[in-house]
Image 1 (tube, one colour):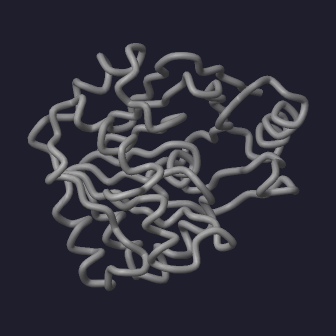
Image 2 (cartoon, helix red, strand yellow; image 1 turned 90 degrees about the vertical axis):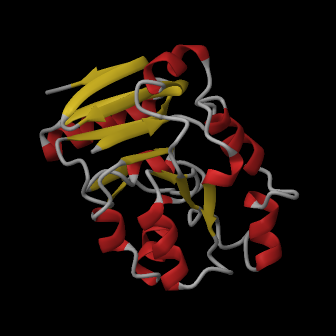
Image 3 (cartoon, one colour; image 1 turned 180 degrees about the horizontal axis):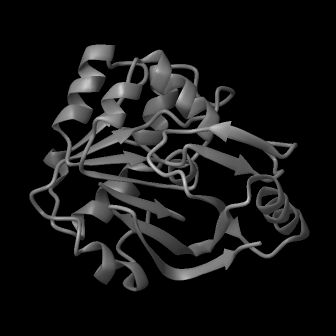
Length: 222
């Protein structure tokens, strides 16, 4: 399995493209699991469409355009629609995909919706590429932490999808006191390495257990 933990959906940036093109092929199909939205902003099909639909979705062009740079045609990319898909149709989209993609947003709510749709086992049985940015990066960890911010006022640990178990990730790293305090706490309490991906310019790629740091990623140990 290949896990790619991103900072954003601009996967065609020069510092990243040459590395990812070794893995992302024009023949690949993609399933975007678009479950990370905020409840107070998305309450209907229309709200969801404003984020992810082809017609007027805020993130659609960025996600689809990023894969287009690797030769993947738009017809090979499907979005798992929280309001329109059934449990069966959602599972089928994932099962047919070579790449499972998790967008940014709220990772804990994304996890809850994955379980609501009974997709946990489907996702864990996927043996291709799993990738995502921000929330879509940390959810690939068996356990992840979130340092305090506007969405999460208190430091907490959360359970993700247990693809990766040997390290933690601090996303959007800007060397702030809050982030550094969180990193020190994780190291003290969990005793594992923390990789901090710099805001918009760091990626972690795990190729069947082999970790490669791309761009600006700092490593913190005991």
